[in-house]
Length: 437
Ligand code: UDX
Image 1: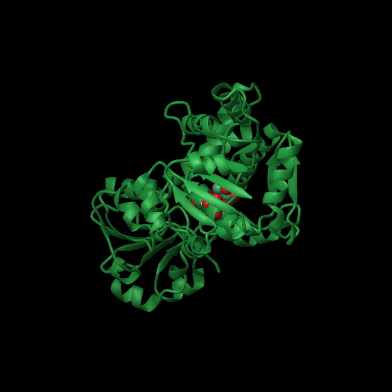
Image 2: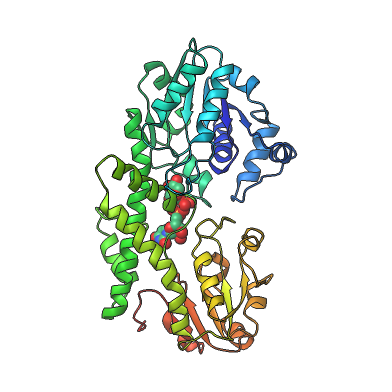
């Protein structure tokens, strides 16, 4: 199959490289010349473990190439994916679809023969109908079908998620297009991945419902973790105790500083707006958004409390800045709420992140960036873990203790064991653990 992938952002690039690895011929297209030059030269503009090797291998084997102009690739394509950005529109929280419609119009003008146009970007219910109308208007004679095929990749595990997904969802109402999509995903039949064919609107809603559900699950355990602190219980045991029930499942039950990232915050807001406008509000999701926003803001106060009620004049070392490990992505990261709030109350901040420093430098002022965890904690009154990178899980605690001026540790990801920390001489606060184990 010949595939044209419009947009080399996160989803576009990962999907493009993985489809090429399935054996299809893929051209990834982006208007940004610099990005295309970089990709052609073997560079990868995003941080995703394993992606550079995948891109390199498929380029060398002639299945993956890059272009700034879509004409040639779209003309030759059986399937054209729209994987451009859908940022939150300022003001109303709806997804901004202008890039999606602009791409649809460009595709329409050059498509040749029956073409399947697939929206891979997360788009509100009804966008497929709109894309169809845009194409029809720009090219009334075009032979095409518009399909919804949402992406469920997690940053940091994207390649594995693409190649071994729990399921693939395809919203399609045209028989020819259904066969093309089946062919495209045929390599997944080998590992028996369920492919769910639905109507287009249903598929569009599945993506939002999935993200909202996961955001709710995290928020649920976060609230239970506060309750654990109030009642003297342990949230990790509670999560295990409920998660072993298959109906609940053990994933996404890690209490922490609140969810961030490029999807959950944006998609929950977009879903709640859509639902309000449809006259069918999703109140659980609205409440989830509210709780999560407040939680991120409340984390600074937790740190202040751990520091004895004031951080004025204190030096705080922060380990982990990105919204989660194995990414350099800072979007909606809890650190963006926590660090300025601490600075406002008079703290000076040193910080270290294994991959996010370049991005983080754009967001913070007056933060001293260290080049490693030990340099970061030197002279600090308190140490705060915000993101659970693996390299923070086995620090030499005696060395950390010797390097710090104070002994306060606030672990917002429950990376460490309370007893181990206490025995190492730290005054240790974590999330949802009453402090006995
Ligand atoms: C998410 C969805 O998982 C993915 O299916 C979708 O396509 C895009 O959005 P991503 O944003 O990459 O992926 O990260 P994810 O691993 O889901 O984590 C999102 C946020 O939730 C992070 O801030 C993470 O720290 C937080 N989280 C996750 C928790 O606080 N606790 C958990 O148990 C799981």
